[in-house]
Image 1 (tube, rainbow, N blue to C red):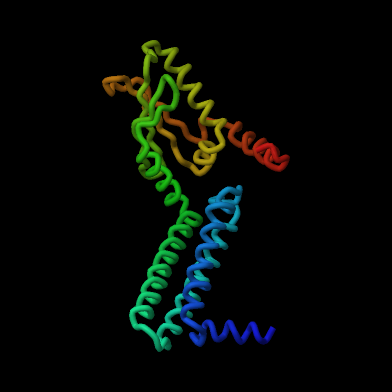
Image 2: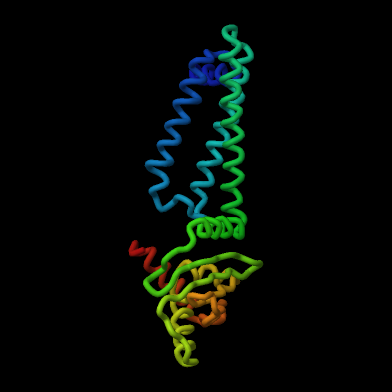
Length: 236
């Protein structure tokens, strides 16, 4: 046990081989961490789940590792008696790695602790993919967020809502679906307003549907209870 402590003390103090520190403790371990995240962890239900902090904790551990390996390589490289180019290269690479690790940890922290940040990133991702064909009758052509309202703009194909009763029926169908969908219910419960604008081929307005938490009534809480029960039973 004392031997291991002595070795790790020498490692952090820069008293070991630069080749070993760089290629094993930095390159090889970084590769293993990357493989673990890409092939195993990101496939689990814990990945990017803000309800638990496992992913955040793992990235925090990686940040600590990056800081320690940065310190170890810098100290080892400063004591290195060989090629100055090799010493400079190892310090430059580990510095870049530390900057990336810090920046990535900041991004992950924002995702966990700032709700608007995560939502805005998701909306940006959607915007990059527009237009998105939703079904044979509608295409999402625009989406953006302003304050606590999320605006969606859809283009309808071969859908005619000239009659007022048809518009009201269409509005009810849309709001019912929003009040039953887990992702949109989560937004509504966080006091967001969903504004759906439907336009025709020439961008003429057909109908505008605004949905907030009140529009769903008590059913919004019933859905959460049902989802919790199904989740505990492993059905979702």
